Length: 88
Figure 1 (cartoon, one colour):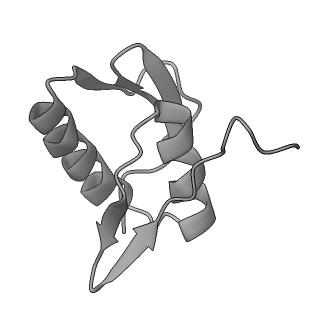
Figure 2: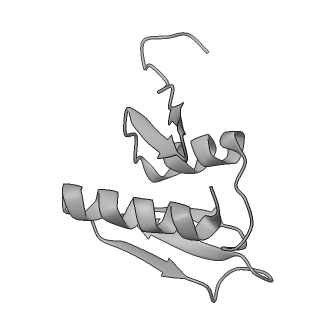
């Protein structure tokens, strides 16, 4: 999944959940920018490049956008949520 695909999907998820989503390319260095999902923020790298599964999972956790399955092409990424009652 590229940065553009992720942005499209997170915007769709925001519309479904009635959460404001915006991408601001100015605060990032180089091709990076800030992605806001409601009151939460993450950094989105180059919109044309692929995002690894680990980075995708981390960005979803940072945004608090925890869909049970976030589709990636024919695959789907299952996001493991941290449990508050689980010792770290």
